[in-house]
Image 1 (cartoon, rainbow, N blue to C red):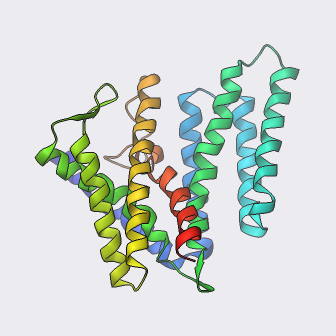
Image 2 (tube, one colour):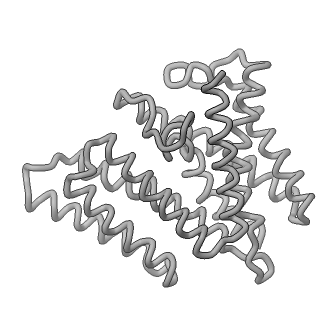
Amino acid sequence: MKAFFVRLSSGIVLLAVIIAAGLLGGDVLFALTLAISIIGYLEFLKVFHLERRAPGVWGFVFLAFYYVALRLWDLEEFALFILIAYLLVLLAVYVFTFPKYRTEEIAEAFLGFVYVPVLLSFIWQTRMLSIDGESTSLIYFLIFICSWGCDTCAYAVGMLLGKHKLAPVLSPKKSIEGAVGGVAGAALIGFLYASAFSLEAPECAFLCAAGAVVSQVGDLAASAIKRNHGIKDYGRLIPGHGGILDRFDSVIVTAPIIYILAVIFLQ
């Protein structure tokens, strides 16, 4: 019971921080997104024991460069350049220190850079989108509706109706019924949210449904990495939840999906 209340309390605090930062936007949300990205990337590198090795250290250098470009310049012109530059640095480290690093370590460092700081940056980028030329915080919250909303609905439906395993080896408790319920629940919440705030309700329901599908892939992918490397949690930062990657495992993939779909359907 104590563990439940610890998890609930930290979850409420985290949700309050996410809401407050989303409403404030600007530098506040940028700083939060940057902090989440740094901690999450460190958690990822620790899984592969790269946090103090050259591929990971260079990753933090380019993480800083990426976020400076994100904040100060037109990132569309620099994002691909930054990714290519980091890859070239990794290849240079690989060949000029050979055989100190394995091919897998280079690939893991690059994957972590794209997977964590780059994808998480879309939290802030989504908040900076505009509808009819005006910046709004409303689209930003769809990221968390389709990820955490799906998670809650999937758990409830799975407990009540779950019979068929979704990924029996990777996550025995997840069911197909729960997954469908999570998508439907996220779509319904998105529809009600959009209706309440005068957004395009059908489009927002579709965005949340699509995001919910992807969120479950993100959740399972994060679990697969943990299973492969024999760890229970990525960290202990959030009491009752684990690390940043344990709590934001689905947000990592829903943020860019909501951003892309919002650009297509809501602007």
